[in-house]
Length: 100
Image (cartoon, rainbow, N blue to C red; front, side):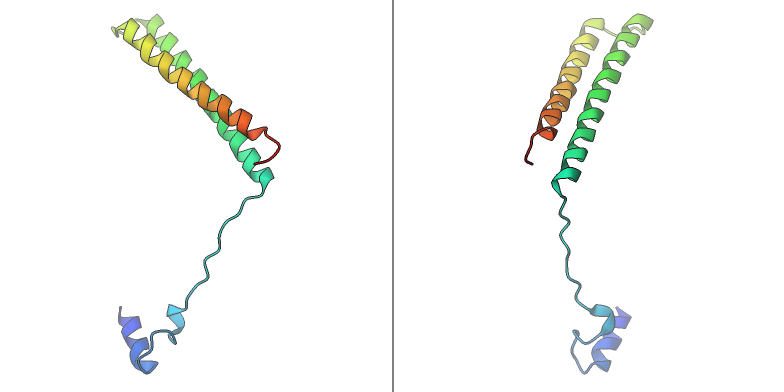
């Protein structure tokens, strides 16, 4: 704040002439298709791995018998596993398309 006030008085009332207040051009990040494809395929792998880990956790929780309602555990676990697997396969198909 103090720097801006100093610049205003020094630069005869114009804020644009202050060196610390120069306007910066915004650069847009543009990814080429190879980077998009690789990123989408990595996201696909991640979703499929999460799906497998959740399935393993549901099975282990049922085997250990931690006093959890097994029906609800399997139902909720199955819904989450199918959701992550569907997202993973969708991203895999999207990543293997010729044009992105």
